[in-house]
Image (cartoon, rainbow, N blue to C red):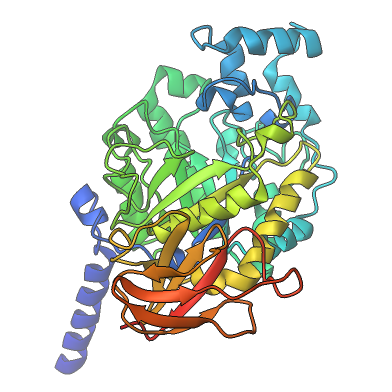
Length: 456
């Protein structure tokens, strides 16, 4: 009996210790490692979709943040915005001054939404994870949140659990999926009058419902800038997420948990359209990080954009290479239409990225930055590493011999190319002679990868 008692005591103490592994302070929260699945994945799809997808409009000749169509309600109402008048003129001419933003919810019908088709498109793009806006700053949720009664996709609009339907489809394709969640809401009366009540009775219960209901792989917060993390009770939520939630072992979070936290606290560090926040360098960074951006100038679908507003497939592949070679991930956004379609031009860009990754994904997935990359730096060349193998990624096909500084010997090949690649040791490192490539033997477009095996 005594032995059983002590055994139970040890088990109980172990359970208590494990439950309290992470404390509600940043030193403890920041000690949690980033799950390896994320740093291996490299490429994800962001989705901005909501009531803002109905007007789907923003100016294309404004600054980065002022181009965002998902900020329609705010820009329409905020007289201090430099583009306020642009939104007012468009709204009044298109819909009439008597139409309120809330009226758009009835037109957010999503009647062409096919989650299986979306999931297939994402898988074929080569992405390994997906992040959906479960709730943007407008407060409208894409799942049946009781905290957003009659302002969610089940009570109004499509009358459908969009967040639930998509995560089921995405996971059936073998991808990870999580949710973007805005901590604040522009015009929520409780938030505007009593932020503490909002956090306790709206935000925290809503976040926990999202986690418990769908068990997401990622919680990607935003809208944190109005208050420090203490007001948002961020460390308390994260301690629960890491200790007691159903996703405690694998979940990934970002760094947007309070006015003081970007690039300092939380999980992965985040940049946006190459706008570097304090602490995130334009070079390499030892802490896991992720760049998010749209294919066009907006996250939410902007029907005012034209061809010139969209990055080319070549530019997007080069952006992916740049982020990964510097140790980061790329979270590339699509903005679906209000009826649930991914615009064809965005589909085409994703297909082109997927085609390139099918040949060259070995140089992207599960790689790390090469510590000698700065010393070996040269125009149009990036590097990634995996074990003893080095990948030399050329965004312009080399027309003559080139050298890789810091490498004395290696077996050289070009991904997707069946022929032999010649190399020799030189005074500046390994000299590679590019093969003669014809249209029939060219393995891909946009960038070419030389694999150096057994680097010494």
